[in-house]
Picture 1 (cartoon, rainbow, N blue to C red):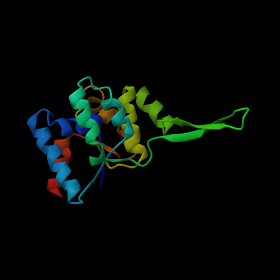
Picture 2 (cartoon, rainbow, N blue to C red):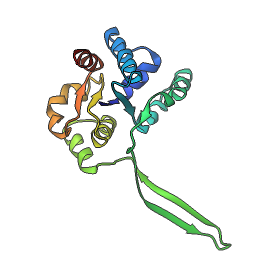
Picture 3 (cartoon, rainbow, N blue to C red):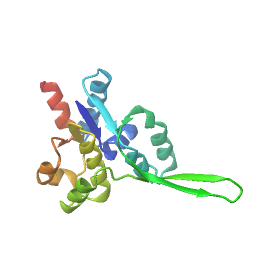
Picture 4 (cartoon, rainbow, N blue to C red):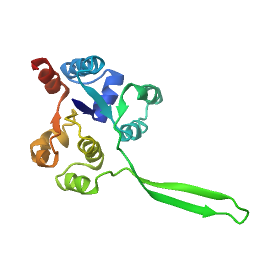
Amino acid sequence: MKVYLDNVIVSGKVRGDLRPPEEMAAVRALVKADEKGQIEIYTSRWTWSEQDRTRDDVIRVKLKESRGEIEVVADDHRVLGFWNQEGRFGTEVTNPMVTEIVDERLFADLKKAGISDGDGRHLMYAIHNKCDRFVTLDTGDLLPKRSDVTPLCRGTKIVTPSELAAELSAS
């Protein structure tokens, strides 16, 4: 089972401060399930971008140091083309043109459904990369609207850490 962790889960895992405590325990159980090969845990480079905005220098360093612990989904950006410039002395500069929006229609539909830009990106990456579960504790956009966005999710189910841990325990 492919599982995408939202930034709030990835960051909370590193800081150890998810609330309520049952959710923190559930995240630890998910990490163990990943280590045992029961699930595959992923996130995206967008998580890193969000973590880079952390104001506390110590926490930001901790978050950066933990980046290798969770694999990044394969498809979280698209190369649109290249911009080339030649200098008069034979020098040449090539720059890639990249977008982080890998599925424009899906992203637009998520935003129309009331999902914020950042949360929409995370959910788009999970859906586009065919993750089975999207794990979050976001009570602003995602959890309250999950039944509304289910038709857009193409089989990806939005769950809390404790919901997924309970699902894994039952199977």
